[in-house]
Amino acid sequence: MLSSYWVDEIPLDGNQHGSALRLLCVPRVLISRHETGTPQEKLARASVVEQAFLRDGFEHPDISDFGVRAIATGCASWSGVVYQPHATEQCLAERELIACELSVQAAWAYTDYIRQVVEAGEDPDVPPEYGWRYLRGIRSRLTTERPQETSQHRAMREAIVSTSGLVRRLDQAIDTLRDCDRR
Image 1 (tube, rainbow, N blue to C red):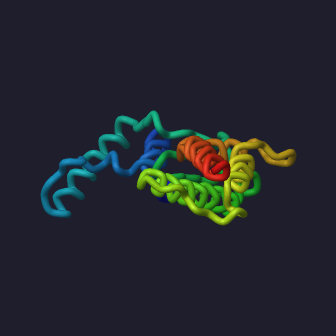
Image 2: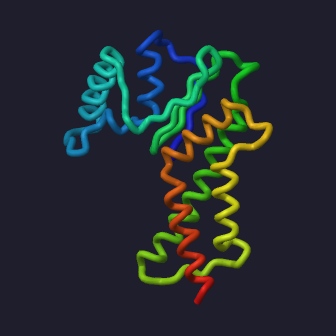
């Protein structure tokens, strides 16, 4: 995940509202990969694409919704998390969203370091307290329900973890560090 948005209000209704939140999740769809021109020209083209998505609706297969109707709208993707509370007393707290997102990003960064070392042909050298058992604990904390966890929190956690691809990365890093321990 690259960005998180806590949205207080959007001046749009109905399908446009949902499309706007989903566009925040994957903003790169507004820009062509092979686009040329001045920044102003690129912005003008992105604005036309955005207006079309708002008018016609925007869905993306990599977006995972986790909101509860009338309480909050939430969605996560590879590149972003968006949450808009509607009932402030019943919705997730901002700190819950931030804590989950930061935990996932930190674990992702650590597993990416291990991946880079492996792909460079080396064995990762990590302190024992941050070895495979540590990562196994991280995987458990990020993928296992807690007795007092609300369904909203579980849905948010599962959406963020699944769209990040973190479980595959954790499994690979755990296997790698176990192999290094055996040598």
